[in-house]
Length: 125
Image (tube, rainbow, N blue to C red; front, side, top):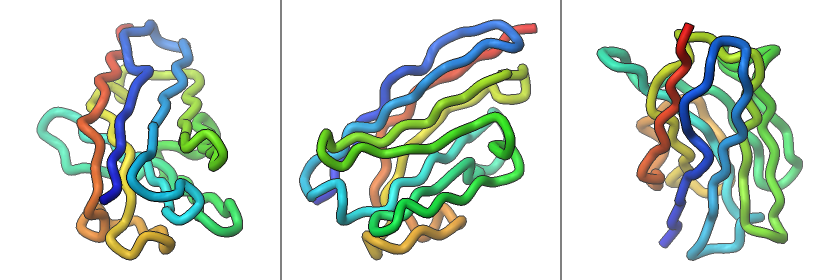
């Protein structure tokens, strides 16, 4: 059973940075894709970035391109999302997730069985 715990959220001003962390347990971190999603109030959950388990290949959704970086440290059982130049529209709950398939990263929330509890990010103008 995969367990995920996010940390690192908080309140920042426009232009600030945050680094979110995702602690992975229950399985070797190297055996699961890690994805980061965001859910803003009144909006659907959207994929920000994914990183493959085997080759470290990354994907960024439109909201994450150019400002966000995803990484992982399998030895430590951790995933990370570095967010720079944050804007008020980045406000929301941020989740790390692992897919039902384990290895394969996708862009659809429905493909992800394992979710953390979320960490809140608030960006003020």
